[in-house]
Image (cartoon, rainbow, N blue to C red; front, top):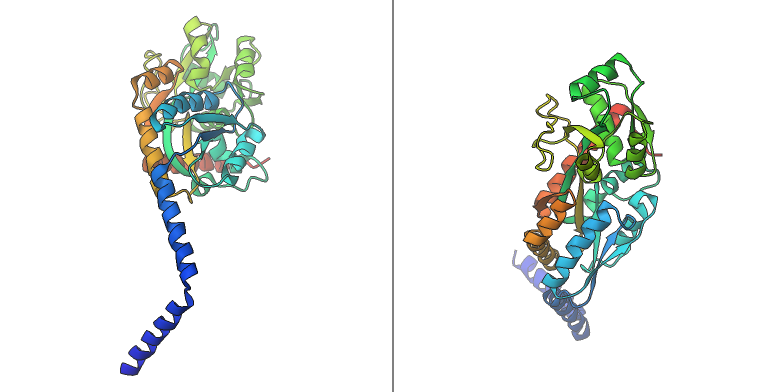
Length: 337
């Protein structure tokens, strides 16, 4: 027993001798710089990589938050649009950046579901990124023309069941949030409605106004001005609670469809290797920004509902949303294209 203890002491001593003074100095410098970097963060401008083009929901949400973060963090926070591939190109760019907190990824449902619908996508948002904040949500609606024959959701469902395949709905493309929402509606109502993919929500709504399709399942913000003008009518909100701007429109829960909950949302994230202290500082900064009355007002004016979920709650939201979309994809045989 004594011999074993002596041997271990000799082994420890030999190992310690292998660490030269220069090696120890380098280790200490590395530790100091890492701690110092976190303490001084941010020491330069920060970029939010938005994987969608300017003018869309992701871009608008990123810019609203960036403006407030700049004043809170004392450094400029700029939005860098890297559109292409349905958001895939910009997401890869954010993943390739140094994990130092100076690159923040904008994440939306389209990015989360990309591996389910787009061939060749190798990233997994739930493991390759850590959410800092899930900022806002926008409930999905079912909208029809003001002169459509269906005054209620029940009438629309009855007509769709009576005439399988005759009605149609427009979306922003295969695998989009609108597509998932439309297929979810078909699944839970046991109806057959033809999917018409388009280049964006504006073309889909234009086609609806022109009488070329029966309905669209957009997010509230995209349809708001048409609802205000009276050119479109909302039959249901895919949410648990009624939206304050359309209080007369019933929810899917009220209509006996408790599982028909679907929304678009905007979230922000960093890479897992980002220093913990920096990630926590960003978490607090986002929370403070989204508690600001002017920021809340700006988002609500744009049709968003401010959620302001911190890192842990946002991760749970991501996981739940992805599981729901996986289940829908499995049931309707939605495969990557």
